[in-house]
Length: 223
Image (cartoon, rainbow, N blue to C red; front, side, top):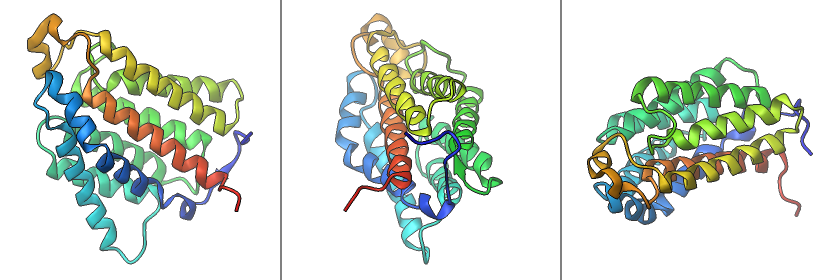
């Protein structure tokens, strides 16, 4: 079990954002398929474009930056290059996380939780969505709360991250039976019930991948 007091030097976090980029690009078609049920069907394409542009920015650097700086690059790519609401929402999420982490000397359980909370609050402030609206908020809120509850209970860092992953997955599944209240899908009314929300799906993928990257950095696989 990773102690709640365990910490990572920033140099150990450089693979986190590249892993998130690869996840989104590899899941492009699945995300667009989910979106096509009640939306425009382009969520995967747009997300893959924005994350791909961030990959290009990373490749142009002499070395991969640590997590706070990589999240800032990702936020700018998404805000500048993704149309609709998702670019600004995800940009706000990652920028708030980056700003929270930037002044810290290393990454630890408390810092990760603070960044997740700040990012969630930024999304709430920008988008106006609340729990039950069938959006990425239905993943972010339970993920944030599960992480904070595990941390407050004295669980190790790995258990906090795993609790976040499990809550994010449950939050995603909960959107299936929700009626959309925001965006294009809201016009469908009851017909939006029965399918997952695409933004929630991408959010679950990103949180799962970020947590896995942190776990790998703290506990690298044995040779």
